[in-house]
Image 1 (cartoon, rainbow, N blue to C red):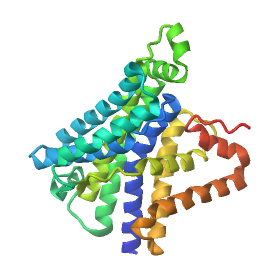
Image 2: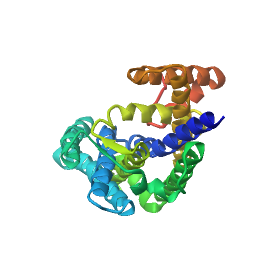
Image 3: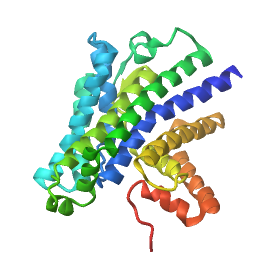
Image 4: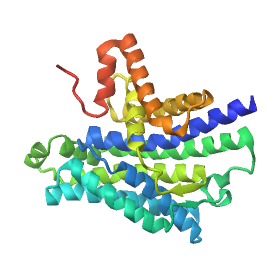
Length: 305
């Protein structure tokens, strides 16, 4: 029973932390209408900056905001390339992602860097082991994620958030009514700030930051968000936030179950594909095309023929 609780709490805490990545992707794809590929680089950036600063003697509560700011700058760089240099959206993300790989390696100074247990954010939980320690990680992660996503929801529903969403949905209309398209830069910057926070939490949870930690994570985020959104009727800001949390936790639990059946690390992407495919089949069987459309709505995709 102890082992089952430990693995369950671990999967849920990983899902909670990763939900910030999913919500960041939802903001970029759905609200800003920007198919941003910067996420993998921002995710790793959050982790490596935190690891380096802690190694240099910084307190983790000071290191984490710096990591978030670095993610914000990465998102702003991608949006600025598109806005001011007329680089296509997808290419701008790819260029930033390529640049971040070298930047992350420079920051780390080596392929990976450990983060000691006592210096991470989870050290606020009393020293423990086994399921009790896994529960502590889940509790701390849940508090941080709920606070951050709550603030994000308030920002999206505020006047400034609504204007930013208008600028992303229809730049020409936004310009005609006096809304600056430059708001897209701030929107994408905020989305990557969330992704960087996901990276720093997961790096501390893993007790190390690795140069490869962001590779392919955008696929996982898309899968988690699609899974979560199929259970909500409308792609509102609140529903997208809840879908990010629910989908990420469900995805990580399914991965944990797959590990129990002998899943190998090299099979993660294949299993991810099968999980998403299975969810699509189940949801389609239960809710039909409307349920699938709700999943696609998270990315602003129209499934109409």
